[in-house]
Image (tube, rainbow, N blue to C red; front, side):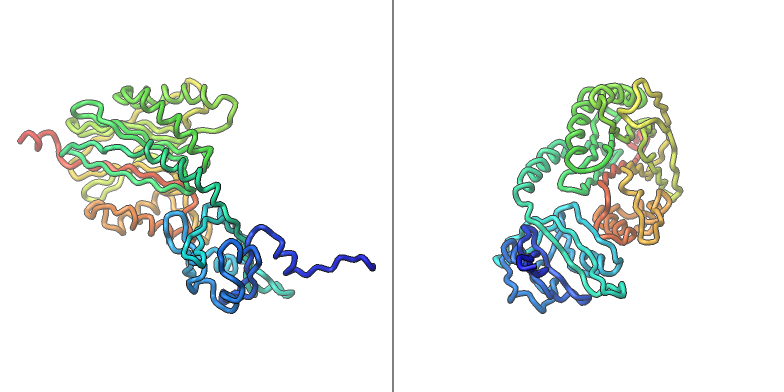
Length: 378
């Protein structure tokens, strides 16, 4: 046909707004699109024939973790697994001028006619405008979560929060109720990202409205549940939660479960207990029943409450970590005899997952019972 349009694949790729580059199995760059030049400032002659990890893009995730090693590189993983992967969280690429540009990345393996993986392709787009609003939302959420932890020589409190996206769908709070009792809430909204993060604002409001009811955690859970049912209305969503109160004088933990993981009680002698007080997630059924469970504590015992992102982790063999696996990781860290370092715990969880990052928000509340009222008075 005389008017037949003849366009090469390179010409098509150069028309895309997304940056595109292609690597061989050794991750040497063999194609670099015009939009890749525009987004990063790196020209084709700067990068062709070089490995993408040679101080060119130097990908980092939102938490500053370097992604250019074999274990965490999305492109390398696509070539090894043969699976196309989108990285929904923001990845930062290094521009030629030293500036880091936020991008959203998709990687895919390239196969020959025999079906063998011979390389990989990555597409990425600049999401700088979107990041501005997300960073503002992150600051608002951090202000909502950050609070002075209670100070009591009989107890030690610590918290850990890692969002999957720039903002997360987990919420936690701790507050002194009276001279001896301390209430807490840990809630995990369905999903993660912006929508879940917005719903945590409602959880914050309800915490401030009802926290005094935590002297009876089942009553607190029922009150929050009733309000969330009204707030969610016809929206099908929920918050999996655990709430409770620690009595430093009596040496007890009283708690109520609402669809979330139950707490771990790790005794000083490393006996581990997993008491249960199950109930439906918050915001699903009006007038839902909630049960109360009380556990006696001894000096040296630790209480760990966590969202399901800490245990619902699947490795490359499709094996779930679960509570037992999480407990074994804690034991390998010699906890509670050794202070729990959350960065080391995160690394252990990531190694189990065999992924470039954990796939859900993670929140942990740690309460250590240091000494009884009797020892305080002696």
